[in-house]
Length: 315
Image 1 (tube, rainbow, N blue to C red):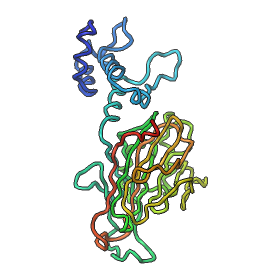
Image 2 (cartoon, rainbow, N blue to C red):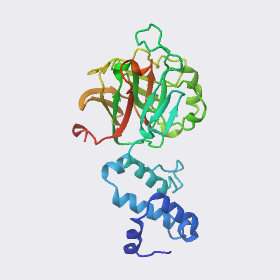
Image 3 (spheres, one colour):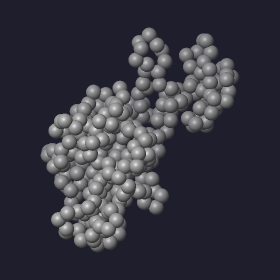
Image 4 (cartoon, rainbow, N blue to C red):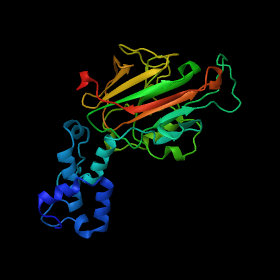
């Protein structure tokens, strides 16, 4: 083995990230292939040591290693891959996937999105028929599998009749490449295809998409079953719910996968548990809908996501 002394091995590893360790495994046969007397290759052992010795207890709890379903097999999730997940857990949240033709990042800021009405829309927000439709942004690279996670959504332009639905969704990939004009929870035509994305890592919960309705304060959720009644148009009432309506503000969401709950906070104040019965993997998401020309009340309408520290009462 290249490094047989831990006093040399670990100090070297502490300067490497997951990409560097992966490159080491790919370019050096002695680092990428396990020897008979060792369970993992040198590269995997470097990643394992970094995770076990440099991560906090809450980080370890948020990133349990997936094991092989075969009890006779000692393999499982790559330690290098798990190290990459740890790096993402420590990095700022970004909307990596934008689905729909009216949603975009604000000035190249991947943590902030805005939406615009369809061409030819009226500037009058009081028309009976508004032409807007929902688009969706997902933090697809930041998958939550266990433990507690907290994010804030800063909403601006609520007075412009811009609708926001922040929440959680199952990990889905490649939907931003399909050229969809509309993508929102109410689009039942997509449910069959979304169900096809299912993996064992979704767990046994049938809550696949769950959001906070900024206008009503209610909870919307769906199991992506077009024949069920789980897609709630008017939302579910829950104890402590409050709306933002025309007021800009910050919505905090605490996903606790230990207890299977999603708790809402309004401008730092705890409102209550919005949804329970959650399990498996989720990503942060928000849907957005601009109903009319924002110039009627001003030009600013956007929503920004930020990874936050866990509220004190939850730790």
